[in-house]
Length: 80
Image (cartoon, rainbow, N blue to C red; front, side, top):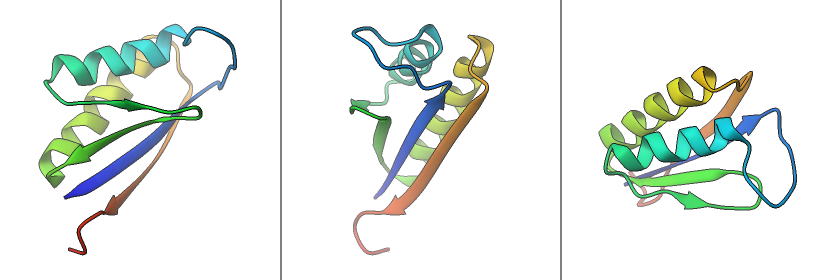
C-alpha cells in the first residue's frame, strides 16, 4: 500500500477550497478513489497503480482549473 500527499498552489487559506483544489478532489473521487482532505493538502491511499492514477487525474484537473503548481510525495505505508 502507498500514500500520496499533495498540495495544490497557489495555496489560499479560507473557509472554502479554491476551485482548482476542488476540481482535483472531484476528479479523484470521480475515478472512484477515496480522498482524505487535510488542512494543508489532500492524500490518497491504495495500491501503487491507484495512487498514481489519483495523482494523474488530480494534477490534470487542478492545472485545467488554474493551479500553477502541485507538490506531492509518495510513500510506502506497509513497508514495501
